[in-house]
Image (cartoon, rainbow, N blue to C red; front, side, top):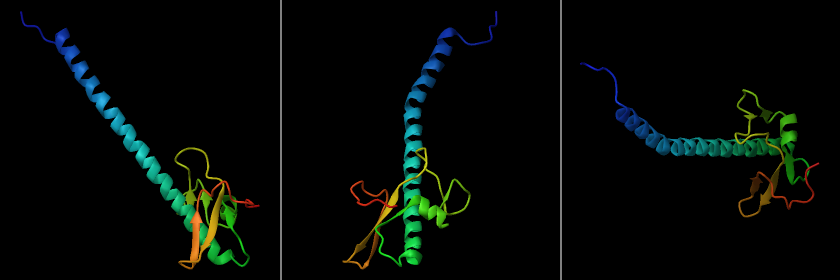
Amino acid sequence: MNKKGFTLTELLTVIVILAIIALIAIPIVLGVIESSRERLHDEQVDRIKSAARNWSTTSLLRPVECVSISELIAAGFLEQDGDSPNSIANPKGGRFTGIVHLRWDTDINQYEYTFPAPASINPPCP
């Protein structure tokens, strides 16, 4: 008699092999996703600092220690969730909020931009 098909042992062997592959692959894939999310977040933070740098070249007619994300958006230096190169979206969820701290570095004679600004900055941006 000619039987066509797989035995129970063969099927269980294949299932065990696939489970082992999944146990190895899933954490690796999740790690890659998380690291790409971190890279994108760092790129968005750099974009925010760049927008603050561009804003400061046109807006530093008064002494200022910080600029808020909402002010950068209102001035057209950033967009929330758009398609333009100035668009920012937080890959970790939610929206970017807060302020960019500007500090004049006397050693190199230029501003340094910190985002997110430390909580110890007083007074916060209006």
